[in-house]
Amino acid sequence: MATMEWTDDFSVGVDLLDADHKTLIDMINLVANSIEVGQSTETLGEVIQLLYEYAEFHFIREEVLMEACGYSDLDEHRKTHQSLKQKVSGILDQYAENPDSVDARELLEFMTAWLTDHIMNRDMAYAPAMAGRFVHKTKLES
Ligand SMILES: [Fe+2]
Image 1 (tube, rainbow, N blue to C red):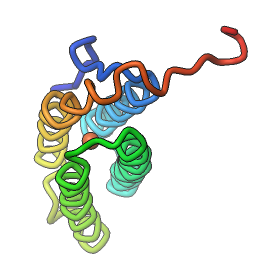
Image 2: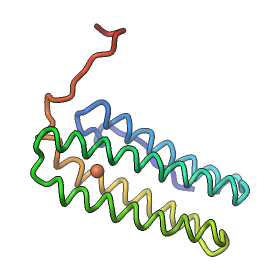
Image 3: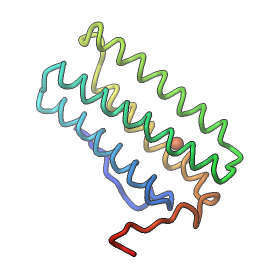
Image 4: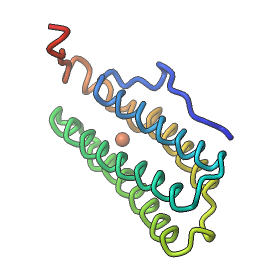
């Protein structure tokens, strides 16, 4: 089963957002693993739900940072987040109703392709606007 791997090419230059993207990649790989080991439809559904919820949380964070730096393409970017959420929440509803009607592998492939394209194109476009912003140190580093 194809899995997704983080590389530095995915970095948008903001640690917090890179960390979110790494978590999303980990969660995609969890879905892949769930399919591969043949976990119950209930467990698989829960893992897909978690991926959806983390994506939702991450989109809010990303939009707040885009807004804070006055990013000009925020509205268009927000629309891409909304359409992804709409699509995946529709699939989750379908899954809850009848898991056999959802092709989990197809969903996984879609999510992998979507996230790769989204980070490399949409997210990368805000990188210059955020460069040097939102840099913070943890207590341990200071
Ligand atoms: Fe985004």
